[in-house]
Amino acid sequence: MARAQQNPTFSHPMALIVHKYGGTSMGSTERIGNVAKRVAKWARAGHQMVVVPSAMSGETNRLLALAKELAPAKPTADYSRELDMLAATGEQASSALLAIALQAEGLGSVSYAGWQVPIRTNSAYTKARIESIDDKRVRADLAKGKVVIVTGFQGMDEHGNITTLGRGGSDTSAVAVAAAMKAKECLIYTDVDGVYTTDPRVVPEARRLRTVSFEEMLEMASLGSKVLQIRSVEFAGKYRVPLRVLSSFTPWDIPIDEEAGSGTLITFEEDENMEQAIVSGIAFNRDEAKISVLGVPDTPGIAYQILGPIAEANIDVDVIIQNLSKDGKTDFSFTVHRNDYARAIDLLREQVMHRLGSKDIVGDAKICKVSIVGIGMRSHVGVASRMFRVLSEEGINIQMISTSEIKTSVVIDEKYMELAVRALHKAFDLDQVPADTLSQS
Ligand code: ADP
Ligand code: ASP
Ligand code: MG
Image 1 (tube, rainbow, N blue to C red):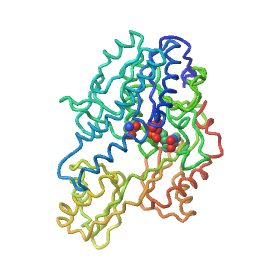
Image 2: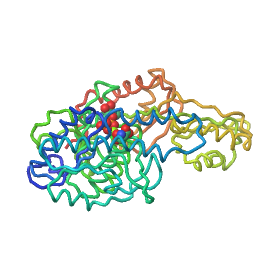
Image 3: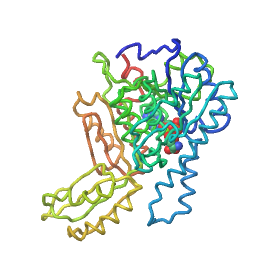
Image 4: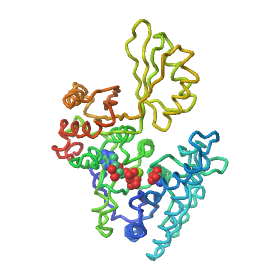
């Protein structure tokens, strides 16, 4: 990959830069003040700045918990439109506060809600997808020398309803704005100083990756590494947005070039001369639940008859396993998001169980999925079996397995998650080899 991309220089004036600040980075008025000082530093260096903030930390959870207090456990009505009206206020507040802080710093600044830009999305409330962004208004303000704040996490559908993009969606807002405006770089400021070999909260020995390939980042995000929302990585890939994850907790006044070269850069081109680690990272996800349909006939079409109604109810299915059949009967298991668990079981009991003559539907919400990820897995055999050996040495039972070219995932009992992640991290030498050499030319 081009060296210029690894060591960007930002001393050339008038680049358009997008900054995104997460909830912890925006977590108090003092922190918002620091964000304003950092953004002002970039603006005073001559850059056109668009800033996408998340809600202050805890605010989205607080708002959604209020709704839960009022809604019955098994709602008959669909509240999702109102949930989006509600949750979107978190980002509206933080954006306005940041604009005020920037004005207090002596800079011209204006904040816009998603619908004011507008950022247009489809109507899938609580998990809407961005369809287009009109950048006229933002560009006009930038041309007047203003710093423009665009709320993260939200947009507007074709009927003028406010929508939100799914938890962690401000990352996606930032990358989408950067893509639409052809920004020089999109910098995702967060509470860690980059993308690590695994979540440093779970494995303190985890190491920061100076670069990570787009494909690995996509897998890690989809397998549970919450440092970037998966759709933000998809956008970055589709539009080749230069994307970097870095800390918002460095002193705000460090030199811009030092700041711009810190953190983790997502790279798009593979360097063939690069020394490639076999496994670059470990991801885990506690958000899934397992469902088993017991004693169904082992005949063609069975998977469709079970999963068809699940798909029609808009429930995503992840890992699937069908056991060996005995006397023409088999057990069929799959995982869904925990939020969909109760609904999926109800639906199977109502629509599938009797029709297929199933003995019972059983479930387990106390599972987790642990995955090893690395483009080096393409060219090495035996990586999955090494993973299985490590888990067996720890006495951890594997319930389900799923693989792709650059990842292997296992579903295990939730209570062994940290043990499994730590053991794998050590076994694949992720705490010993300086991560900097993993995918660094
Ligand atoms: P923000 O509010 O800035 O969007 P998030 O909480 O969404 O921040 O994401 C940052 C968090 O992601 C970190 O605090 C860390 O605990 C977690 N995380 C999970 N996996 C990783 C990883 N591989 N590298 C870095 N952070 C990770
Ligand atoms: N505030 C939203 C959330 O908590 C979006 C984000 O932070 O990215 O999920
Ligand atoms: Mg986030």
